[in-house]
Image (cartoon, rainbow, N blue to C red):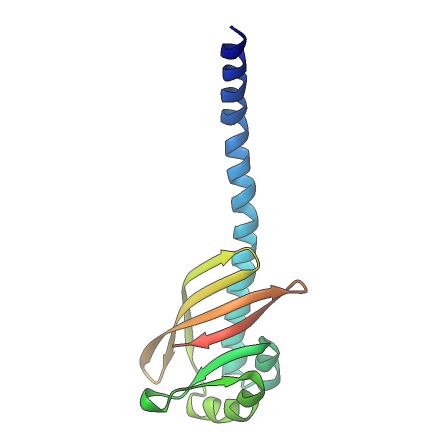
Length: 142
């Protein structure tokens, strides 16, 4: 009899508490997803405004940033990208940005977006980390 009562109490607790736990887990992810989307949208806006210093501020100090096309692709550190960015913006002065997927796992996020430049669409991935309450880009590749 005691075991039955305990089993019923545990089942009721599960039925009542499980949905609340799932909701609590989902709500912060939605907030973080919105923050991440805003950062990447801002990145596109700053690119189109040719605001190089603000763009560079969006990258983590240890970021790995892809640049170039075809056999000329490379990966630059943030420090190296300072000298590359002006050429990249000159080559692609405006772009369209369409976020297709956002995956937030705690303090890390992956964003997949389609970048449209000169009539071509390139699938692009941004890796991000949240440090000191700020989302920063740690990797950019296509």
